[in-house]
Image (cartoon, rainbow over all chains, first blue to last red; front, side):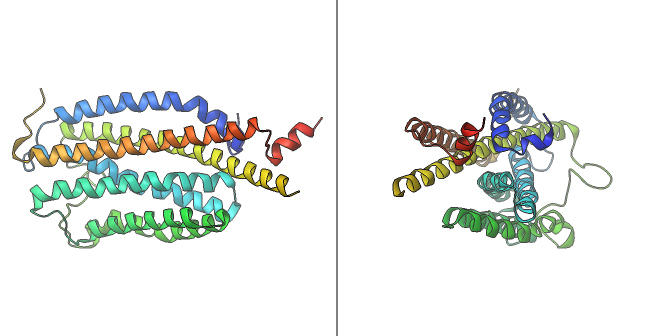
Length: 243
Length: 61
């Protein structure tokens, strides 16, 4: 099967139906492995056992931004090529990305309270992630409230592309401004500053979260294709009743 | 052996509890949505309602 064939919704559904059980199984196995590593990782010399929150917080943050990246590529597909699967992909990714961003904010607050002495501070990193969450809510509102799905999709795609500016702001906020949030410690020039005994479980959890995103995204895309078929059939049924 | 969670155990446990809740809720929502859409689609097909593309593929020789 050529890659272009997957762009056909019917062929895409067949592929997803075959892939999903395997993806779900691999995701569960990766979570078992990652959580085992996370729960048995040594305490940090400064942060103690609270470093265990990092195994949830950092992958959630990455996935919150990654999902927006997926939506941005899909938004181009919607606006430039008007491909129906592009809009399906964007709409399916939005609630999942919002959930990961919410998780990032909550776990960050719960980590911040014992380490910084506060749940929240209006510094550049925290504020830009909150803006990302609000942008997700804006995109979801456009999808869920638009009377004409096509117009809603185009409006959501434009907001997604505008909001993509926020992704590098989140990434570099800790370098550009003086923030309470620590600077980059995993992907940075000169290598990671995290000890391998903590870094390895972090990568395992990041892979597990990414697999979870892929699994849920494909499942949500399948749902969206079915929803559109139901809508099309109801329209046909209504037209038949009128005629 | 899992280490002692120390004086901030409540924050660590709360973080994992929230994560489990969010992931479980998201998964349940997607699974339930699939069941609902599949059932509605099957119901419409049983009543003989077809999409335009299905009609044209049936009409094709």
